Image (cartoon, rainbow, N blue to C red):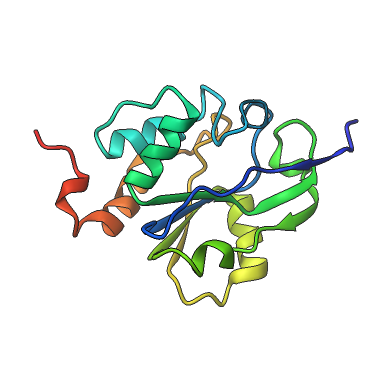
Length: 169
């Protein structure tokens, strides 16, 4: 058993970010690559890039550029914890993110919580937050109930006033 405390990744955002997507804690692969959703089977990048009609960026720098260009902030609810592998169920001693780091500097209109643990931890600390927030189906390859349509609907609600965010056909 590996009980060593693990540290998460820094948030990605700027003052123009409009939607904040919060995961639970980086997977082993994400910790190895030092960036979010690093496991090739995770549906996150395919879903998000597909929503905007773009190809998945090849590098971390290009992914950060994509997120900022598309006004998407990205972070995890857990900034450090003890965890077995990548299993959310094994998270112990979670130190939670201070979302004010982003909320005080960005124009966040909605928070999308990627999976059950992210949602549960968010409610522990931020249930009274005045911003709208939604529990989303986890993009993890381990989630058999993933539904991309739910993601597309929530993203469309945030970005619909900005026609330039959608690919032209």
